Image 1 (cartoon, rainbow, N blue to C red):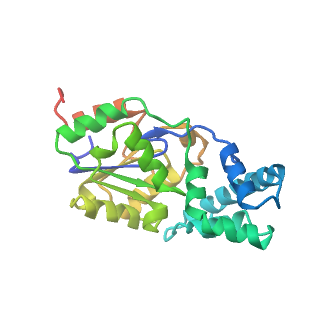
Image 2 (spheres, rainbow, N blue to C red):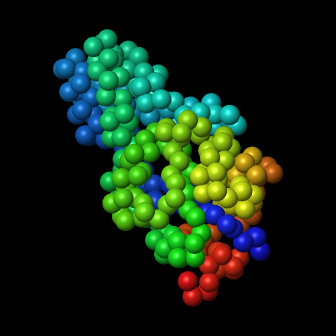
Image 3 (spheres, rainbow, N blue to C red):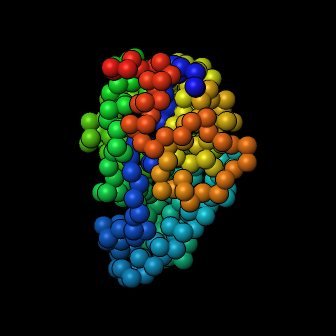
Length: 255
């Protein structure tokens, strides 16, 4: 049985919210980029370039961005490195000026929904006085904050750490260290819950987290195993996490 946690740190996508497949070129983003380009680029060209940029950025996240000391790229640099390199100068400059609102549009998913049992386990943890914090890699944390606000969960978190705002990105352990400091709990007394062995469990191990919990998601099944990085516990959703917290004595059985 994992030791009783004094704080609970959680990933966003795949843990707090389902992260369904999403078009790499959302129509509203394509339209905005065409507008910013001032007619110099067609919607077809922008859609094609966005699709390519999505793949290139994903490869960066799996390579450079997946190293121990990795940091998130600033919004303007993401667009410059992966999308606008071959665009007219005026279009490149317009995108740079709007880099953050565009990152929000690329990140936001209307299909996001809280995972089963998540509202229940968060509410029970809050009633039990267990501090909660978010530790998440993302291009735009503001989109995650707005989703949580929209579903009424944002007030349950003592802190939210997103890679684009904080700088470090998992598996860089600094993101977890900052969250532990924010809730004023030694990292060894924290549980960290994520859906990725490669990023979340590896990050938890590097940070010295007391217990690494893997919550299965579609991404979990796509990952190759990482030798020496087995989680301490595996759950299927928020209901499973609530049961695990009860077994560990962090939440009363009736809580």
